[in-house]
Length: 60
Image (cartoon, rainbow, N blue to C red; front, side, top):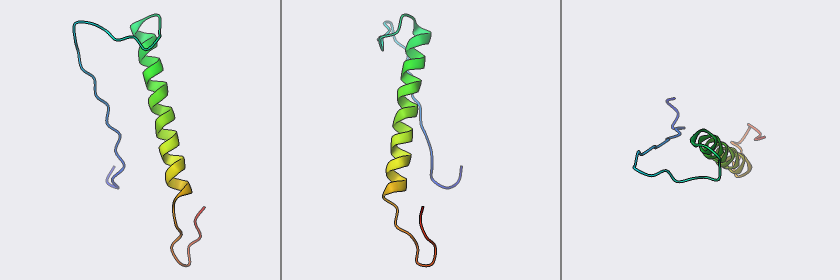
């Protein structure tokens, strides 16, 4: 990935677990991962919608 597109994830341990609404830690991980994927999709769509074309090369 040399084009500047990077996704970072951070996890910190602790004595207590914050719940994302799931029944278990695994379900909370799924909920957080799904929310992160949705945020990434929205960011990509926003980038595509705001792009300007280069003269001679039409944008999508």
